[in-house]
Image 1 (cartoon, rainbow, N blue to C red):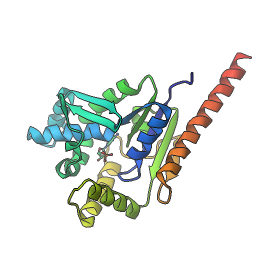
Image 2 (image 1 turned 45 degrees about the horizontal axis):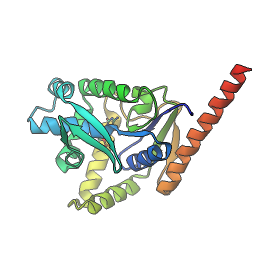
Image 3 (image 1 turned 135 degrees about the vertical axis):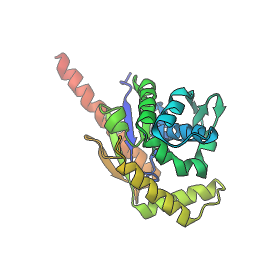
Length: 234
Ligand code: DC
């Protein structure tokens, strides 16, 4: 029985994190945890309650919500205070406000606690912006997924169209550029390449290639770990 690992996948919006992470988790029989959905759920709650988008008020919301991340054959379902909000958290109003909410230190503290509780025993693929740098700096495998901004815009547009959302290219471009700016420039846990992480540029890779590269990293980790265990026991 192989040791259950913590696999951290970070990167900007549209780099392919969620699809890749979900497929890697499926392949390994691990849980897939989409931490962006957690920040989105807090944002949805704050919008529903008409809470001002500032640190203390949002922190209160984050501490008081009940968030459950349920594994289903179609990926993670996000349950907020007993309601399935998996689709609702993808709406434009949430997308437009989430970077402001995710920049609040009190919100981040509450989410990081929850993420550590979920992932601590391993057997998880967790994707986000700060998983390898803050949530699990000792993750066994850390990946930083990047892609050219034009390709990320193209992917998000295709995704929105497939989901029947009315989004224009200029809207998506504005959202991605603004979210990159906010996520990378915030003071608390900005999007950075964590030390020890492996870069994968997905601009011209297929999903299968991306998934395979991470599976190869996991196999390499197990080989090294087995070797160390063997020599350790001689
Ligand atoms: O990956 P996504 O688009 O669902 O993320 C939504 C927002 O949450 C995005 O602005 C970045 C933020 N986020 C974060 O700050 N830290 C994480 N671990 C995950 C997402």
